[in-house]
Length: 455
Ligand code: 9B3
Ligand code: ZN
Ligand code: ZN
Image (cartoon, rainbow, N blue to C red; front, side):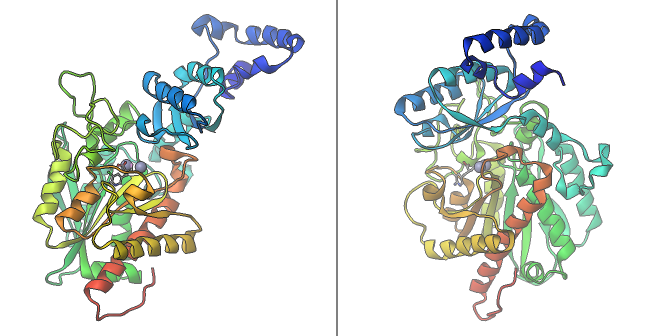
């Protein structure tokens, strides 16, 4: 690779100005020479890849500038989820595409805002995440160690149902705004009467790719390890599992084809240029109060009314009509490694707070013990942020008392761009949490069987 690309790549176009005048002159000559055709084309020093910056504002003025950058420049906030929550002394994770790198770096420098480059090669990692399977057979990664397109996931759903005709059923729970089917798999490994059930949904948020990957892995693991792994066998003997691998198929598709950083669904709001409702702000749990936005361009737009979106309505309808059997609700997100329980929509404690807390604590301890990885845990409002309209809070209010949201890996190194080589580890951790919680719930409902837990 030639020298001018390397300079751009390191994000040092501006840092050159820190040298003395003599060196500066030499550097300039070299620089202009090396960049000559690039300058002709673009008139500036260009980044060759999108970057993710970690920025900690240390004054109110810097907070305002960051808010401004994240709104008015072509960037995507990863953390916090909306610019309203940027505050002093708290890390901001900002994705800056290659073409706005120069402007944004410049602006941050001008206001003496220091930052760290979390990821300098975001484009390369995006490419790595999309690299397909069969094109690189040497990678040795199995199907469950890769990310998949929506079409691949639909194929996989059909294949799985065909391969396991006695235990897996496909259920059409609804369809998306763009009329894509919302398929859930029902795993029923055992014909005991009056079985309880667990619901797991993945892919509410389009860019959180590890989430659908987990749903696929979970189904695979359940089918393969029933009668092999003790915890899995106990769980599946006692409950059916509904798995919805992609709750937001339109958004997910869009992250593969147009914008890797897309979060919401793809509902076009009439009379605005803005698209998308945050499905995890669209449920009827203190809907659209503080922590959501009624502004259609916001990343946390709550929609026109609760369940206004076909995707959230489909899931809500299904849960309403199965609430007597469904005991456990799980929603899988990323990133930040958290095991969250109700409530997120209020600071009030859930009426079964202590039993839920005991479960997430135990799950986090198991993850730590087996995988040496740290997950924080607790009620959403106190652990991540106060936010209304989430599916877990709504399910809890409906009467599904064991309701949780998991935020999977990582804690910011790769964020939403978790490399395929980390899928396995992330899924194992989440699986440990699912097992821990399911076994605890079973223990409670059959207080007589006091078998000890081995997950
Ligand atoms: C948010 C809410 Cl509103 C909830 N009830 N539970 C979890 C979250 C966190 C996720 C979100 O939607 O912002 C993390 Se991506
Ligand atoms: Zn999410
Ligand atoms: Zn998240």
